[in-house]
Amino acid sequence: MKVDGQTFRTIWLADDGEAVVIIDQTKFPHAFETLELSTVEQAAHAIRTMQVRGAPLIGATAAYGIALAIRQDPSDAALLAACDTLLATRPTAVNLRWALDIARQELTQIAPESRAAAAYALAHRICDEDVAINRAIGTHGLEVIKRIAQTKKPGEAVNILTHCNAGWLATVDWGTATAPVYMAHDSGIPVHVWVDETRPRNQGAFLTAWELGHHGVPHTVIVDNAGGHLMQHGKVDMVIVGTDRTTADGDVCNKIGTYLKALAARDNNVPFYVALPSPTIDFTLADGLRQIPIEERAAAEISQMTGRSAKGSVETIEIVAPGSETANPAFDVTPARLVTGLITERGIVAPNRQAIAEAFPDRVMAQSA
Ligand code: MRU
Image 1: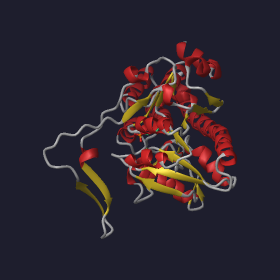
Image 2 (image 1 turned 180 degrees about the horizontal axis):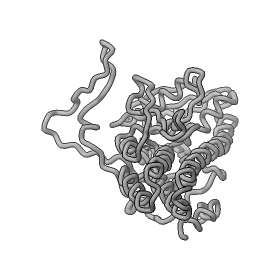
Image 3 (image 1 turned 90 degrees about the vertical axis):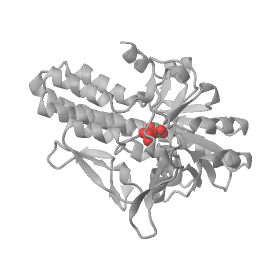
Image 4 (image 1 turned 90 degrees about the horizontal axis):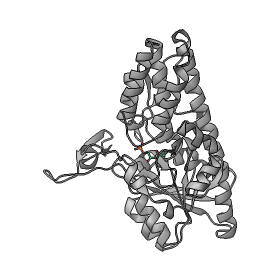
């Protein structure tokens, strides 16, 4: 995507062809800063501290992390240790395990002296595949938006609600939930996005709003609790969210608060779509509620808030009564029965085992191998 006229992906190689450059997402929306990663430890730190985040970008960063490890030590032991280090960074987004499984399977077949080049090539391939997948999700999601525009909102903007950031910053490019939005906007279909702020880390207010603003897409940031009210008043035509892990039965794990949006959408007959790239499907799990590990994050994410003060400096302040306990589950699971459709790179897929397996027979085979 473009930032002030310059084309960016979220991750790329430095001029030396070896170090990896990322956009430091902890600095948004106050600054656009890039950061160079030279070691696997730095890649792991970037994922853990959410300098990079979003399921597809976590997978892509892990792939580059493996390349950084192997350029220092191409042995089997170093490869397996790097996989362990990276896998321990964040538990919920399955793209991390997906990328590391591929790296381990492919690279152990290659002689150590050729491994570094193969690891970089693999990371490039994972990135390019992510961009192609998201572009395809965009074209399929665009058809859904077009249909709503023609049948329900001729001459008016289609109002789309989204939660968290499943935009291009969460992927290598395009985003998943935002790809159909960008394509609709670019093709002249009027769209307006309700952006959930997404407490506690404010990925909506900090990242999605920044992205949409830079692309010129009309949007409005709302507090996380406003969506149900807007739906009751006919102000939301559809919901599109991303996902960190979707089970073989179609249960969708995504940023905390997604489930409440799905409940409100069902109560108000608002279509609830999930943009789902196939690397985010976990064919080894069926029951999302009981089987998906939910990341618990630090109390400070709830008790503190960072923003720009009236004087212009970025400051962190305390916002919770001193001494109160906090709990910070970072994701929740929306049962398949609340999902209208999965927008995948192979079209709109019903959220059930048979439809998902029929759409991705090759992926089912690969994961059960
Ligand atoms: O904790 P985060 O910011 O990594 O969570 C991100 C999300 O929940 C996204 O919706 C999901 O990863 C899909 S990104 C295309």
